[in-house]
Length: 289
Ligand SMILES: NC(=O)c1ccc[n+]([C@@H]2O[C@H](COP(=O)([O-])OP(=O)(O)OC[C@H]3O[C@@H](n4cnc5c(N)ncnc54)[C@H](OP(=O)(O)O)[C@@H]3O)[C@@H](O)[C@H]2O)c1
Image 1 (cartoon, rainbow, N blue to C red):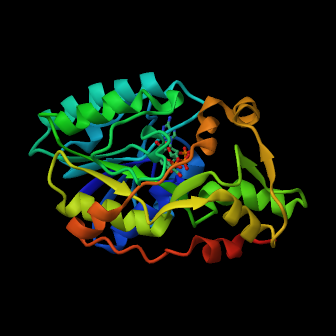
Image 2: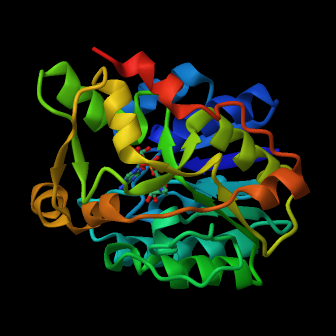
């Protein structure tokens, strides 16, 4: 397939780019800067220079693609407006430009809210973290879109690669501080390694029924304290409040305190997804100082 990737230099996107190229797909990838252009070219993509916030500048150049995979986000920008404008422009342009394209939209685990003891599934009701509430109408729009064959992947908390969600833990440990966890050591995160998640994106892109959603989760819910201790060589983590993290990083960082269990069983059963990284405590040893 000829596939356009948005966000192909990110934690998720860079793994998806590698995986799709490895599976023989032809990739056109959006880049807003010279460094991103260089990275994408070296990875084997054709580069489309442009900004997510100004899709009218570049949509004309992806006419006729078979699919778009949207994994781009910038927490420092007004993403609600940017994403709505992107969908307004992109979906109608794709509808005009050739055979119906597949469109994979990235949601996320924080749209499902705290789950209690039972793992949430694709059928569970949304209860989004307020900072991400804008994503819900956008993904619902993609799934119901007459213009494209819409699909949604909801990643769990992504690790691997450059550290992903544990990069901050690794930096604390490397700088000789206690690793900081938000809310409590017992807060559980649904986890997925970026390479496993990328395989799921490929399966969804190639095989999933239009209108379907998929949870990309390999470990339903792992207490963050266990990961913090693994990275810190057994040392006690420091517990900080969600308010402290929000003040430091932005309101979105309250998600770090969300206690969740999510299930990736549907993708395993229906798409044959087989995540290989199922022992995150061992994986993160690579990030020990
Ligand atoms: N990582 C996780 O654990 C996780 C979990 C659940 C859901 N998600 C969701 O998955 C999506 C991707 O997450 P991520 O962690 O991979 O993000 P990331 O590492 O921050 O990457 C964001 C990507 O978007 C691109 N981008 C941002 N603003 C852009 C703009 N104005 N124009 C063009 N490109 C732009 C960045 O390109 P540059 O090279 O130019 O920076 C980068 O490739 C987000 O919607 C996030 O909420 C992530």
